[in-house]
Length: 264
Image (cartoon, rainbow, N blue to C red; front, side):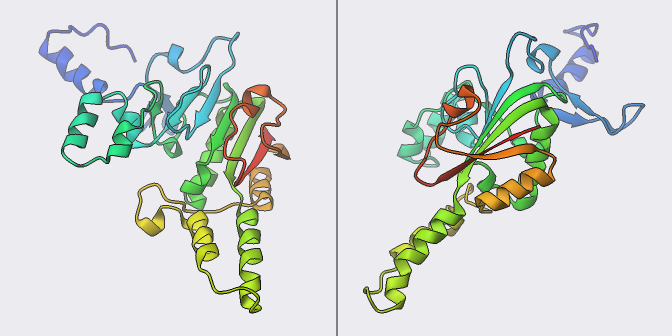
């Protein structure tokens, strides 16, 4: 819809433009009435939604503080929002509402602050690669499935998604190996293995943090889920080993992660 014909200084123009300024440029909104009811309207100019045919469109979901060049980076952390509002960030720090460590940590201003569980601002079959690193475990099981379906929607046929999550099997195996000698009386009691396992399972939640773990995955669970959602060629990958060099360079945390790739 084009509102350019409205006068910028008239009361009608101001009344129409004001609410539009409040809509994020990458918002995905439902159409509530008319012949397109039930469809999704992507706000913002088409140029910010679909790249040119000569460029690969690559999404990094849950990117953390850093935005890789050539990737569309998304994160829902308030720090991603505050990176674009340094005065507000400074004020929160001065008021004691932000710790010194959080204030010193610099987030890239190229990160798009968005809750991706509410939809990705791209049309169907337009994305080449998606990287999802240590995000799924922070979502409920239902939210995780919803996000993966959304990833499949926007991926082109043949597009690839690479997922990294903490490895539940590795954590459970380490816990059993450390606790078994204590259970048999071969080692003195020590609660450290218990605390490490719970930290992996419920990281943040035990400390009432906003971004704690809400679910846990191992290879079989994630592979079955991806197949059920319509992905194919699901493959477990080694650290920084991928069918696409652009994806392999994104890996981190090899000490506690599993990596899977799947094709639409």
